Length: 237
Image (cartoon, rainbow, N blue to C red; front, side, top):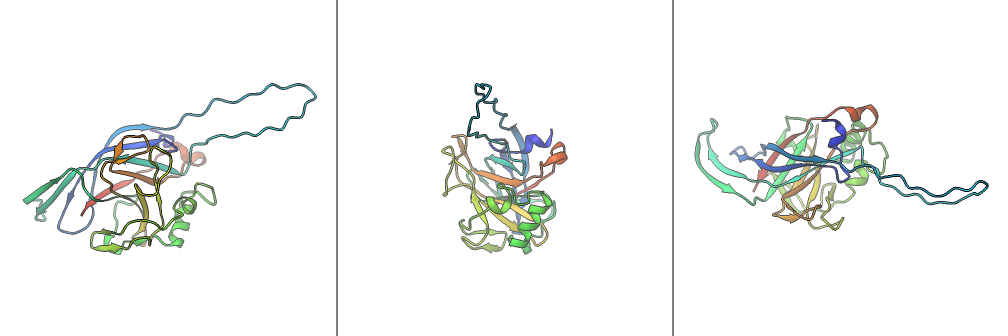
């Protein structure tokens, strides 16, 4: 699957379910990702106008271009809270069908969760550079341009409300500011893209999802011919 399939501007990968277990370590646990569907916006047909020799014609041209900087994931989360030992021997467990918590994604498979905090401006600038976004209209700075999100915990680390760079993924009306919060976190070395879980919220397609998550992706130039691996964790509270 080419990197083009990972871009979004309505191109979205789908997570129908992330199965997970929250262990006594009070850290997010790795999620099992089940791919249901992957699609992207098709190129629009060209517009046209009649041309007459000798005429000079003023026109206004508008269009939509698929982003080369982002991929999106959305779907539902189910899982289990478990009381277990270090060998995964379960003492007791509780099934959770409508969890509250977060979904995390990073290009690193090893996050130091005890160091997690809001991503700094310097770290965001570095991520912009790493993904060749530069000063583009759809770069990280222009996308995560708010500080508006609920308070939440990452393991034992408290993230206060409205302290991190954030944005809201869209619902079916094409905008919103009350669901699908996306927050930029970092462990000091790696950016962690974070979606705060909802409970069956109205998503961008007009159906319901527990989350919508934006992740940065370099699809510029020849980089668009390759793919990038993202690792996922989930946490319920």
